[in-house]
Length: 256
Picture 1 (cartoon, helix red, strand yellow):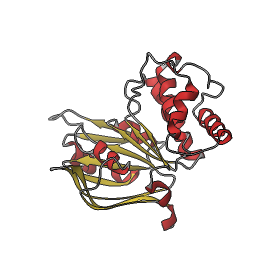
Picture 2 (cartoon, rainbow, N blue to C red; picture 1 turned 45 degrees about the vertical axis):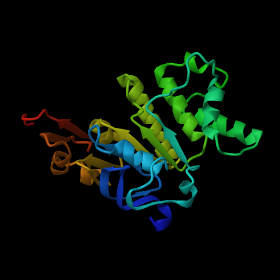
Picture 3 (cartoon, rainbow, N blue to C red; picture 1 turned 90 degrees about the vertical axis):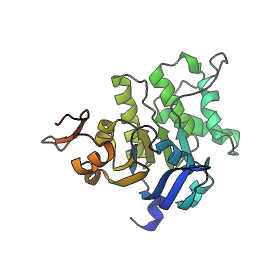
Picture 4 (cartoon, rainbow, N blue to C red; picture 1 turned 60 degrees about the horizontal axis):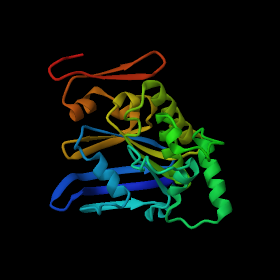
C-alpha cells in the first residue's frame, strides 16, 4: 500500500484533559480497509484517544494526522455505546438515521438515496417508516450503525457497541461489521474489552496499558508476551488446526 492508503497517523501523540495526561507517546498508523480493535481495561485511555480522533479533545502533544477528507470529521462515522434519544418522543427509523447527516448539506434526493443505502447495508431495508422504539436491541444497534453510515464515511468508529447484546445478536452484529469491512473496504475502529472478539475479527490491534499503547497486525500482537504486558495476568493463546485463535485470560495468580 502507498501513503495514499493511510487514513490516520499518530506520532508521539499525548492525549488527556487539562492538567491530566491519559496517554503519551502514541505512535500508530492506520490504513484504508483495516479492522482495528482497541483493547484495554477501564481507564486505560481508549475513549480519550477516540475523543481526540473525533476532534472533541485537542492533543496535548505530538502529532495527529488525518486524511484530508477526515480532517473536518465529515468522513468519520461514530457509533456510541448507547442512544440517548428520549423514548417518549415518537421517532421513525428514517428520522433517527438522518440525524447522522447533521452538518452535511445535501439535496432531498441524495438524502433519500443515502438513507436507503445505509438501511440496506445494515439489514433494515424497507423499515424507514417504522417506530425506532419498536425495534429489538440488536436492530437498534444496526440503526445506530446506519446513522453513522448515512454520512458515507471512510472511517467508522464504534465505542463498545456490543455491550448488553446477547451472544446470538452480538454474533450477527459482528458479521455485519465484517461484511462492511470486506465489501465496502471500510476502515473500522472497534473499542472493546473482549479480546476473544478481536481474535476472530481484527486485522490490527491497539492494546492500552499503564498510559501507553502497543499496536500492530493481529498475528504479531496476539501472543502471550504482548498480552501479559497489557493484562499482567496469565494468558493462554490457543490456535486450532484451522488457524483460528482463542485467547483465555486467567485470574491473577492462576496459570493456564
